[in-house]
Amino acid sequence: MGRQIETEKKEVKKSKKKERKSHIVRIIFLIIIIVCVIVGIIFAKRLYDLEGNWMAVLLGHNKETVENLETLRILIMGESTGMSDTIIACSYNPKTQNVSMLSIPRDTYVTNGNYKYSAYNKINSLYSGGQTPEKTVQAVNEITGLDINYYILVDTEALIKLVNLIDGVYFDVPIDMNYDDNGQDLHIHLTKGYQKLNGEQVEQVVRFRHNNDGTSYPPDYGDEDYGRMKTQRNIIVEVAKQTIKLKNIKEIKNIINIMKEDVKTNVNFDSIIDYVPYAVNVDMSTIKTLQLPGVSENRGGYGWFFYHNEEETKKLVDELFNEKPLPSQN
Image 1 (cartoon, rainbow, N blue to C red):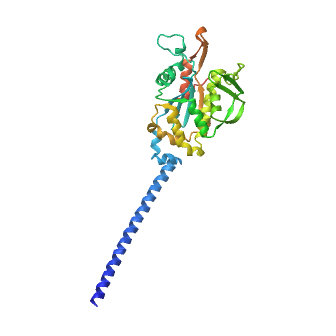
Image 2 (image 1 turned 60 degrees about the horizontal axis):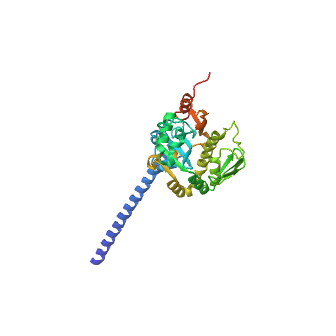
C-alpha cells in the first residue's frame, strides 16, 4: 500500500512537471508570435511610409533616410583610344527623383599651363589615358560651377560586356550609319530604326560621328559631335533602363564583376548604397539630357575648339542640377 501511494505521488510530480514545461513552451511560443506581429507591423508601417519600397525597408530605412540623402553627382567618362571622348555630368536627387545629364564636348577649351592653342587645351586631353581623371572632374566643375566629387571611367569593353550580358538593348538608331576606319579597326554598319542591338553594335552607335561619304546627323538632331553626344546620352538612358529590369536580377553578380574588371571609379559603394532603393524607381522618361551651350571655332592649324557660353551655362546648370526654373521670357 505504501509503495502504491509513493508511486502515485511520483506520477503527480511528473504530471505537474510536464504541465510546467508545456506552460513554458506556450509562453515562449506566444512571445515569438507577439514579436513576429510587432516586427510585421513595423515592417508594414515602414513599407507604407516608404510607399511600398521593400528594398529600402530591408536596408533599414525610414522616412527620414531619404530626406538626409544629398544630391549625388558623378562625372561619367567613356574611354576610346586612350582619350575621353565621352564626358557627361550626371546628377540624381533622391528626394525629387530628378535625374539630369549634361554632355561636355570633347573639344571644350581649357587653360593648360603655357599652351594657348593645342591638343592639350581640349578637355579630353586631361584624361591622359585614365591616369588623371581628377583633372577632368576639376575642369568640369570650373566650367559648370558644380561640385562633382565622383567619377566613373567606362571602357568600351565594359559597355560591350554589359549589353551582351543582358541579351542586348532595344534602341532607335537615328540614321543609317556606314563608317569604316581600318586604323582603329572600327566598322559601323547599322540601319535607321528601332531595333535590338548587341554589345558590339552599341559600341558602334556611341562612337559614330559621320559616314564614309561625309554625311552625318541632320542639323535638327545635331551634326557630328553634337549628334554623337545626344546619341550617347540616349543610349546610356536605354542601357540603364533595360539593365534594371527584374529579369536581370539573376545577373547582378556578373554585372558587379564587369564593374570591378572594366570600370574605374572613386565611388565608394558603402557611401551610395542608400541611394539604390530609390534610384531603381526613377522614371527614365523624365530624365533631362542636354549639352553644354556654346560655339565651335576653327583656330586654323590648331583645329576646332568649343567655347562654352558662361551666362547660358549658368542658366542651364540652375535648371538641370539646381532645379531652379528658367526665368520668364516675358
